[in-house]
Amino acid sequence: MTTGKPHIHYLKRQNIDPQRWDECIGQAANSLVYALHFYLDHMADHQWDALVMDDYRAVMPLPWRRKAGIRYLYQPAFTQQSGIFYRPDAPAALPVHPPPPLNPTAPPAPPSALADSFLHQLRSHFRFAEIYLNYGNPYPGLPTRTNFILPLDAPYARLAAGYKKDLVRNLKLAAAASLDYLRDFDLPTSLDAYRREYASRTPYIRPEDYRHFEQLCLLMKQRGQLLVRAVTGPKQQLLATAVLFRDHNRLYLLQSTTLPEGRKTGANHFLLDQLIREWADSGLTLDFEGSEVPGIAHFYENFGSSDQPYFFYRHNQLNWLFRLLKK
Image 1 (cartoon, one colour):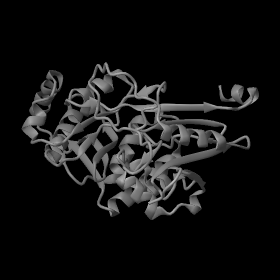
Image 2: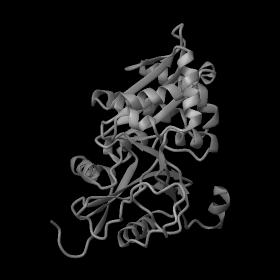
Image 3: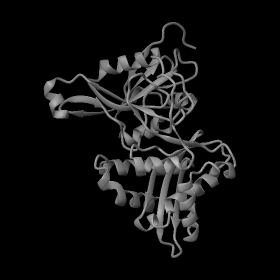
């Protein structure tokens, strides 16, 4: 083990050891699939560097782009959270708290020497950054973003007992519609449905982002970590689909699509209820990937989930002209 004062190295992508990187992410107290090297390679198109503490005791991916000759940090598509990931032996590690109550009264987390060190290094390499720090990086003063999670650590009956009345009512509507829950649904059909329904609402997701995500899905399928689920009606009409990734901790709801006819029958309520039934008592956590849209947030809350917030970090040292261009 490295001794003495911790040292943070800036490494270019080609100098990062993928095996040691993924070992750090896998052992991290705040492990997330978004930080694995192949996930970043796909969604950042291999254009990412990193801050690495000592012998990969703590790491921070740095996806970057270039505009007007200036490199800046950004959050890749379909990559909800990034930030600092740390093994238990990392010095001054940030505390990973359980999901707070819906109306937390606890004071904000105290400053962390680990976060201070990484963010100081970040600012020395990039003059502009807009990224999301993960739930294990509760740095004081940063705005929070909502992410709902549901631990699947109990039998289905106990999990369903936590459903809200709105959800129970919609599940009765779905039962009357004679819906079918399909496992191992066709991936291209699900991806096409998502893009067709939501591309106009998410113009910041570029065509190449969809291509990269499809390639990532195919890799996750090879690794046995892809789930594609769907709901159809009595005439096999497609009503709702979901694309999820699985790691040793979580099921990540990367894409959830409800088609117009599915909204009339509670198809998405039925799909997620069946998914919870399928994975109940697995010990995994269902990560809904949250939402700042009140209606969607309410929908996820109905499943008895709790908010595990993550954090928006913005850094701007551009001169007045580039500040104007950015605005």
